[in-house]
Image (cartoon, rainbow, N blue to C red):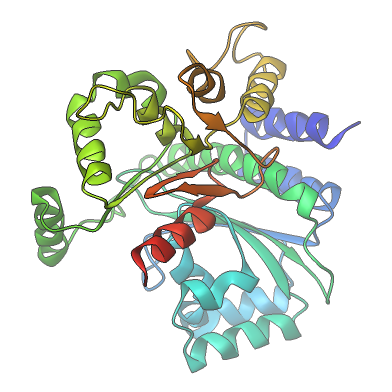
Length: 341
């Protein structure tokens, strides 16, 4: 079987699972199939608060005991990075994501001594609920299996949702573990909503833009205003859908003649095949009502892409576009470079 076929089987198995133990077994099997050595899945409010009900792993027992004793896990920089990212990341990237303290370095050295050296973590953020993660880890000095990373992310999301559902049913509700904003955080949200003298606008993705951006005329106008003012106007993944609608003050489409990227046909094909194999949609019915690559080419844009699930972003003047959810770092790098910081 191919890796693609295997991940579909694993996803179906976790979705049909009737116990957390079954999900744990499936994750353990998938971990070996994807050429990792260990996995851990956990849901928690933050790096400094108690864990929520979802806690599954096949980490060495001595390491688990150490984490539990004295709340040692509060020094885990991976937990800090999860709170700052929606995109998967390798542990080698931690120094670029977290201001690593002495405690963080000691924690990672201790993990390495337990045989947990290289890892790939998928952050899970459910609106209004505790954040979570799923990590796939290498023992010794083995490198991460690059070709397995997209499959690992795909499985992690479905496995987490299945485990979360079972944990809630088991415990008879979600209790009061829902994180709440502090007054200071609420003030920051209000200030951000009011806007002000900003240097860049970044439009993120998700599936909703493909259905809702046609009507988001205020967003079209704001995006174009940044672009025509010479400020950075950036979009990534399905957020690039905005370029189908954004028009300059002259009436010309912003995308015309520009070199851009976005969620590519090869990735739409992968997603469609996945839902067809899972019987989530009848074969031939597509997830998306239209495709970014096709439409932007029709509009006269020079659409470029780096291949299936490869991190990639491109800049054309002060317009920046990123290919998909693995392209957050590349997009951010171009935004920062364009800002001259």
